[in-house]
Structures are given as structure tokens and as C-alpha cells.
Length: 477
Ligand code: C2O
Ligand code: CU
Image 1 (cartoon, rainbow, N blue to C red):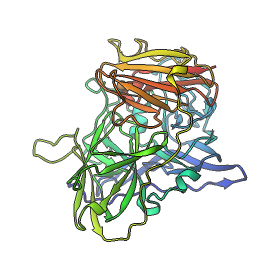
Image 2: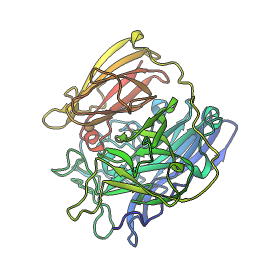
Image 3: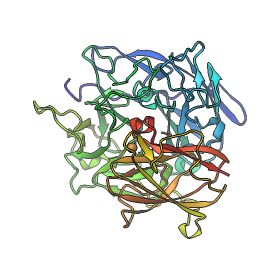
């Protein structure tokens, strides 16, 4: 298809079904839906409320949210709030399934996995305290062994937390603040999604066909569910919350043409919220599940300029048609008065985890053990605990891998201390819950394990690696 023909749409914001003095209550039904993604074709998705990406939840810091997730899909689901400081019962542990009303496991399913967790039938109420600052979080499926295909089919949505610090800043707001959820997919001729499951019913044997075990990458780039969309902007600043929701692809984003003087992206936030001070970038390397909150100032372009958001890691097909090397296009369509700016100071960072105070230093290597993807050589076992940090203690974790793995810890936001023995990289700033681990890099991070006691997973966010066992547990004691 010809890129830049479909307008960018913005996921709708979900209304609570009920609010009281302390809590906003939401209801989401996970179900199949038909959506026009490619022009003129219908695609079946599995979505929150049947749509992809799911509706956005906007929460306020300090105010509780309860989401009733109702499962009308034919398979078990689990919903995780990625980046949330959430008690373990509501965190969406991979075996804490919500079973469909009538569910019969296929006889070829792995024994044990579906009997291990705390099961709910038909629905579960997830409670989110939101005792954390303004940040861009997302919710997505986390069913053990099947997260890759279930997210791919559409089970992902945004969850924004807002607070007073952010509200007090003169950043672009309203129509000039929007998410860009970037992911890649493979479509069949008839518009249906292709995913190389061993058992496409997702009821039996998990895993992907040979040739896909490094991860499933698509040849069509979607932003907010639209293929290579375009957006008309005025010659002013915009705020984009970029999320890479792909299963296995990383993007190196750049603007073409770059504005005079370069540095088009002014980063104001990372996964855990706003930075202390803005950081200027020429490019953004965004690995799966990472979030970059950025300002782009389109007044640096003459009105009429068409600016392409490129992926420098992408490729063109044999006939030279851009496939994954392009993401979307901005058209600087009109003049408008500027009302926003990016202040020199954004948000206080709270207490940083001081590595000198660390209670423990742990090493985790992410690599294949010859058969599956593993952590320190071990495949995921929901019963095995690999780290027991004390509640409130600081720990230093050294993460290493033999190929690309974005590593995500549940419950905590951490700081990157070093990369490859040197300083943190240009994309390591701020509070992070997911960090890019390159081929030979050894990344040291420090986290304070506060919030809740209990068992949480950490894993590679290449979803095929995750499904093929690259996950382990820590338990806050
Ligand atoms: Cu976004 Cu455990 O995942
Ligand atoms: Cu991985």
C-alpha cells in the first residue's frame, strides 16, 4: 500500500463506569472485533473493548483506579499494567489467568502452567493505587507462554497517569499532546493478521514455527493502529508519547528532513515519568516497551514541509518501496501562535537509588541455553525465585546478554548506572522500567524495591523470547 494516505487517529479515552471519593471504576471487555486497518479490508483483532489499540485510561496520581477486565475471548488472558507500582494480586502475574466462561484446554497444552496461578472466571478486578508520579504506562496481555500472539492480535492500550507537577508545566496540551504507539505486523492478502503460532487456536502447544524463534517482525508499520499514517500539524510544538509496542522490533527514529541545526527530539520523559531536565536528540533508539516522551517543534520547518518519521533500522523491499524504514509523516499545514514551551526544569526526581547503599549486587545473563531463551541459563519456572530483595532496599543488578534483549522489571523504576563499563547511553536517562541490552553491553542498574511485598516477574520484552522462557521471578520480602 502507499504510505501516508491514512490519517493518524488517537485512541479514545475511556470513561469510568462510576467514580466515588477515592476511586474511578472502569470496565473493559476483551473480545474479538473487526477493524479497518488496511484501506478497504477488515482485520479481526482481539482487543480491549474489541479495538486496537485499546482505549486509553487517564488516571490521576494518588487516586485509585479499579479496572474490571471481562474475558469474552476463547482463551485465558492476564492483564498487566506495565510500569505500574501495583500490589502483586493486581499485577497480572503470567499464571493468574482470567478464564473464559467455557474453556477447555487442548490436550496438547503444557501440563501445569494453567493450574499454577490464581485463576478467576470470566472477569477480574485489577486495583491500581497510582501512588506514583505522572507517567506514560501501558496495559497489555501477559498470559504465560502466549503473550506474543495475544498482544500481536491487539491486546495493548495506554494508561496515562497525570499529576500536579506535570499540569503546572507549560508543555503542549490538548490536541498537541498525543501518544504514538508504534508496532509492526504481517497481513495476509485478505487483511487478516498473520502470526506463526504452532497452534493458532492458542489453546494447545505454545510457541512459534521454526524460523521465528528470534522474534516475530512485521513488514507493515502501524502507529496507533494505522499503517504509515499522516498527521497535519501547525508550525508549533507538539508532545508525542512514543511507545514501541512491537513484539520484536527496535526502531531508530529520525526526522527527514531534519530541522536546520538538527536535534528535532526534545526528550522530556522516560518510562517512569518526566525527566529533571530536557535532553536533545537527533535520533531515538526505542526498544520494545520503552517510552520516550518528546517535544517536536514544527516551527523549525516552513509551512508546507512534509516531514517523515523514519526508522533508520528499517529496510526497503526489492522494488525500493519503503516498508519498515518509514513510520509516519507530519505535514506542517498551517501557521498558529505558539502557546507552549519546554522549561529548563521539568520535574524533581525524588530519591535516587544510591549504589553505595546497595543491599545486594546480582548478575543476570540473558541468553539461549541451547533449547530455549533463558535467564542465567534457566528457563522460566513460576515457582523459582531468583532474587529476594528486602522491602525498601536498594539493589544493583548487572544485566548482560549475547544478543538484543530489552529487559523489563515489574514493580520498580530503576536508574541506569553504566553501560558497557562506561557512562549510561543517550537513551538511558530518567526513571526506567525497561532497558535496551545490546549484543555485548553489560548494563548496571540500581533500583529501590519499595511498594509491595510479593512475587513479581522480570523478563525480556521481546515477546517471543518471553514466551520461550526468558523470564524469572524476584520476591520482595
Ligand atoms: Cu510489558 Cu511483564 O511486561
Ligand atoms: Cu530477548
